[in-house]
Image (cartoon, rainbow, N blue to C red):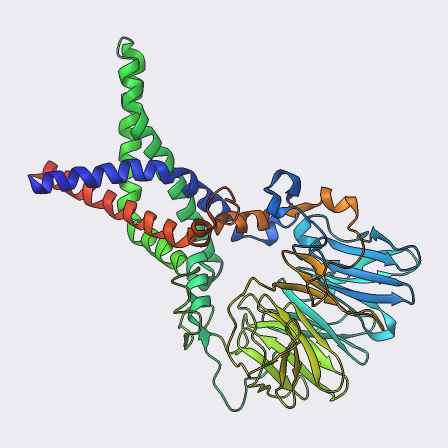
Length: 510
């Protein structure tokens, strides 16, 4: 009798718990498939106006501006998540300057703009690099000369050379930038660079750990979960349809046939793919707090027979690169921290004392003078002396003790961008509050009306949906724990379904 009641509770939970979770599960699957193929969806976007207010631009927030490039004495090119804009100090006007850039909001997320050899102005987007044609006032793509499809992370210059950085390699070319040579940064001499457990779980969850085949398999799992949701709905509601149509034999027969077919496929998919679905749910649960916290700093050796197992120490680890014009050396930020190297052909050396940087990465890296740099991320804004290791919090003005590990996002000062006009106060672009100074006082020009009609990439909407931030109608604590709660919920629904199936199957066998 006790076992019977327990089985009934399991059945009830699997049925009604699964029904309650169906909408969110469908959103997980659809958004996950989109996230797995960013470049394929890069030209697809939607208006921000149809999304919750938290996704509307207001006073240059949401990374609208990441930085500025002084084009001439009275003109600045500002760049960020909404492309490039030309600001004139004479007229105090701001106009879009995206002519020649690929369409699609994701293609117009600009990472950096620099001046390279022969005074060429170069812009770097997620998947493309562009050179400014001054005569035609438009951008010309140089991507056809770049021998890689990997996502770009930054650009820099040294003398006449342009350096394009991807997540794994550097590509170097001289003017006119038609022939790029791949450079693989050497491993450090004095330490072993290992892989982040967080990144490993992330790539296992997406399938990227096993390359394209792994990603396609996870896509297949997403499709199968969608089928489980649809068949689950049929199993739940078809008995009611049969009851309503009991006086119509033909309809009853069709409903019964559909019910049996749905039940067969629901059980077959659920049982056959149970292990893979559990792995998918468990790995996803570890990608956000609270389970993220204990693994975020754990390292391990590369796993054989995966994309981690490569001779390139910096595979998928490069994020930001700058050339120190004063000390004639390179400063690079990686997922493993900050490193210096004298030339691109030498082994880098870790800078042990560095400001805290959110695990989402550096957003600001600018040299101020001989040894001082401005470092910004979602962990705040700091001035850093790379020689002495001295660190100062630019919001509080207080010195900070040396930090050598990744910082946790504070969300108090989530720095998304920075611009220092000549002989004027610096402008900090906070992700939530927008343009301000370090006293958190609003500043900068008024945001054009065109930003209110801005669009957001489908990929970014999928990301916000997948992590639960888009459900702004939920309490904040639920949104923060959305991934953890969803993972636990899905695991319980999967296990309860399997237990019920085994009990019924065993009963039928007997």
